[in-house]
Image (cartoon, rainbow, N blue to C red; front, side, top):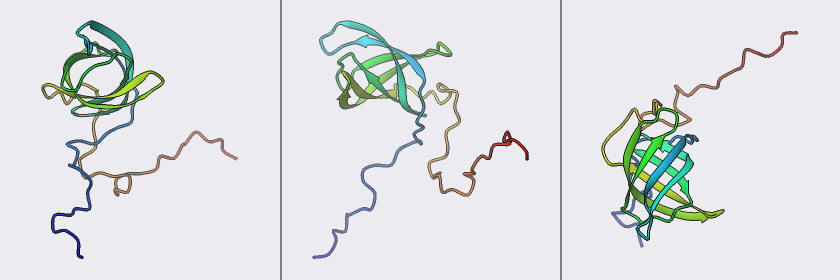
Amino acid sequence: MGQSPNASSHAGPRRRSQRVLMQVAVRIRGKDAEGGSFEEETSTLAINAHGALILLQARITSGSRVHMQHNGTKQEQECQVVFLGPVRSGKAEIGLEFSSPCPTFWRVTFPPEDWSPKHPEARTVISTNSPKR
């Protein structure tokens, strides 16, 4: 049998923006799965122009809304829980998406959608601080 005409070499939908593995200190507050209020200091595992992936001890449900504050700038953004991942060391991976666009929240310039480390503009940085002989 041949390959299905709908088969694709890509698994799942494309991301709207590139993920950047970056730890940013944030404060998350909202209601947990039981309806109680919580506030927790954590940091991001990855960020993108539309939200972040964090580790959170509080148990929350998919679709719930929380507020995320960037500890460096004190800027706050409402987010929706769009991903509930595995639990490690008592904290769950949580994917958060900004409720309204906020491309400057992280103070980072994200690479374009088609960028990859193999892109011609991706250059290796060579240190100029090495001792001269």
